[in-house]
Image 1 (cartoon, rainbow, N blue to C red):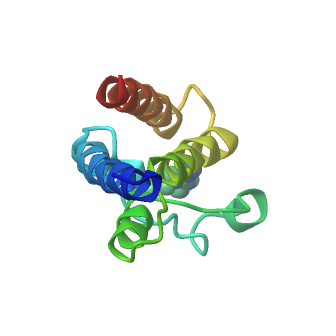
Image 2 (tube, helix red, strand yellow; image 1 turned 45 degrees about the vertical axis):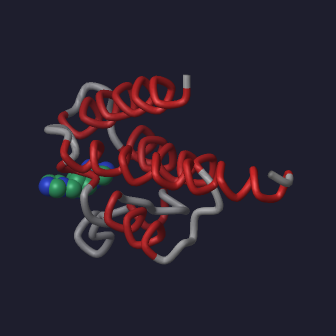
Length: 115
Ligand SMILES: Cc1nnc(-c2cnn(C)c2N)n1CCCn1ccnc1
């Protein structure tokens, strides 16, 4: 088993974990704000404030198009969803709370799967 073969196996395992994690995120009861891209035409200020929009349907598409090298690049996009949410929404708001709940759930799940 060469180093390259081990790397390839790790990436395959990592991408399998991405699919599991994304399915769990989409199924979470607090996922509703993040399932589709924010409609920036209907949300004043969003396009100006949020430089890199991201949502679960876009992540699913990127995963299907093999655009994630490994688990790490996937985690970066998921965290972007939650960082955008924190930037644009008050902590004490329905969407803000959903973002915090989803981030906590995600952090717990990927660390469980990896440990
Ligand atoms: C995600 C996310 N972050 N901010 C918003 C949002 C959308 N409109 N307003 C006033 C916001 N603060 N969103 C998208 C929430 C998507 N949504 C809203 C109702 N059902 C889905």
